[in-house]
Length: 124
Image (cartoon, rainbow, N blue to C red; front, side, top):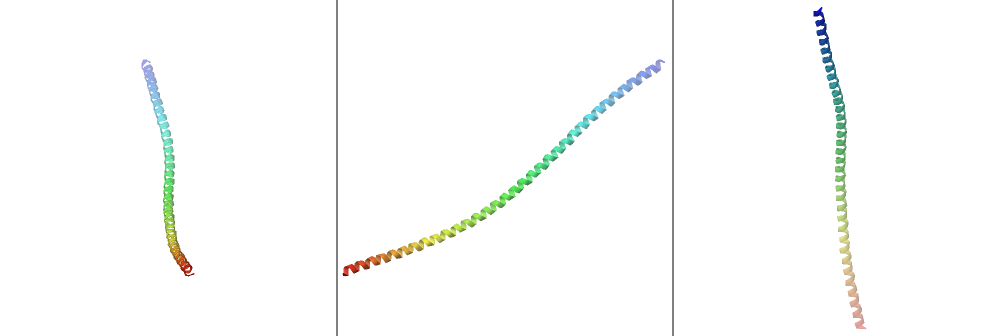
């Protein structure tokens, strides 16, 4: 009978030891599971942030391309405007020269007229 009691005691200690080991294993699995859930959640958040960052990058690239197009259009318009202004300036310069020449001709005519009047007065 003593052997049966010792065997029961040994079986009880073995059962308690086995249950303790199982509880620790379950606890470790639960911990690993919670860490896995956190990692999966973190991974999803990282994927979302990556997608948002990629979208921002695409938008920035599109804005840069638009800015380059606008800059090229502005430069072209400025060149056309500058060329137009230069043509207008040349036309104005020609008009000024023409007016100066006409003024010189008019002044010469006035001088001739004044001279002719003076001659006529001297002859009278």
